Image (cartoon, rainbow, N blue to C red):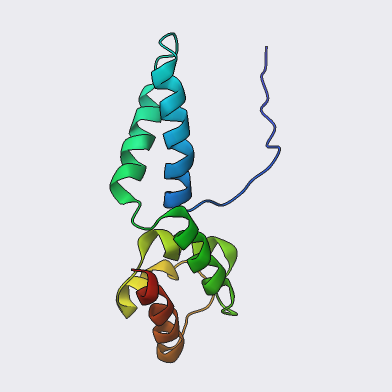
Length: 118
């Protein structure tokens, strides 16, 4: 017997947005004694609680501002919003796998936007 799972949709989330969603799941599980929390879910909740810095609305605003830059695609904007790089080197690391690099001025412009939120 073969089981196939079909991907119906895909959406990027910041860690802050994931924290908000997982908080709802955690409350739902706490209310329902019959539903034990799986190890993976508990680890995911622990992760978002540790690493979410911004509130969900702020993280969405930051992503929107980052998307205004020509060289910042959607996935990279979410990565930057999660990591909140504070230096050129940290930001360069985000772009390390991309086919292009940002010059010093472009890096500084992105860092200035991030600094408004961090």
